[in-house]
Amino acid sequence: MKRVSLVSPYALSVFGGVQEQVLAMSRELARRDIDVQIIAPDATDQRAYDTPARLDRCGRVVRVAANGSRAPLTLSPLASRRAHEAVRDFGPDVVHFHEPFAPLIGWSTLRAHHTAAVGTFHRHGLGRDTTLAGPWLRRWAAHLDVTTAVSEAAAATAHAAYGMSANVLYNGFETERFRDFPRTRNDLPTFVVVGRHEPRKGTDVVVRAVVQHNARGGVPWRLVVIGDGAQTEALRGLADRHVEFLGAADDATKRRWWREADVALAPALYGESFGLVLLEAMAAETPVVASDIEGYRLAGAQWCTWVRPGEVDDWESAMAIALTTDAATRAGARAYAEQWSMAGLVDRYLTLYDEGRRRFRDLG
Image (tube, rainbow, N blue to C red):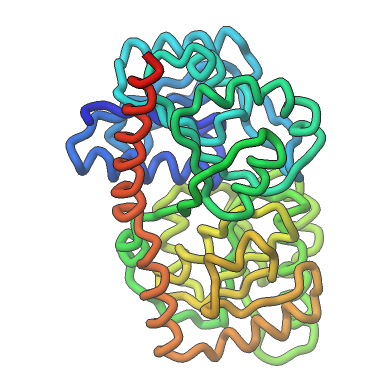
């Protein structure tokens, strides 16, 4: 294995789990002396990212409603063709498509099927887009030599939408990076929530819980909100003076805040496929309060404080309980999180890459 192309349908300039996964995977592959290319939308994005990979960014980004979110995609057929030209110029042994049927950056490469192709499905939940486009996209299913999913929930979605049967792996992450920063002692109990500001992420629920607690008097809680989106101004309108909005943050800032937090919050209402943010916080030795939804349960297991999604009173109570988490529980959560290392995930993907190459050769 000499070269791998990683295709992200979502712009790297917008925070998201798929983008984080692609960047982390590129770093781990490079550690193994594999040349890596990342294909993504947004030709105007000239920022450097924490990766040794070659970056090829094509097309104009538009925000497309999908699965309760607004995905930063390109809908340009020209961008898709240019991405395919960049892949052919790079000459990979394997093209690894993350969310392979998401429009549109990877479609020309997938349709051409000029080299071994591996697809990873991240999404959990059907929508109007999959209902309308699914039957049309199924014709390209055979162009994926190996198909994987990040969870049972994502595998079920891939099967329902596209008729695909996927090997269930997981989202990996570089566990040691989440202890790069020192732990700090805060003057006030400090909670941190990270994610896009859109209704399904449930950030308003934890803002309300903090404001409700603070209105009771006593020691106030501090909430640090990392992210941005269409809901930002509405969230500001709900907040009190102890809620801080940092806007979109880079990876290092996010990792630093996971270490500085007394408790990490994951309040999504639905639509999550895996819950990598839970594991990141656990690897940083920070207790987690999370919505009890299907897409989070495997990642959190017994190490999270679980709450009914959307219930402000329940969130307030659970957050108070999480502040009392003992050292043994933090250590157990960290050990559990380390089972999901990116190094272990890439070990498995390299085996699947070889399998994909064999299947591609057998097609003649």
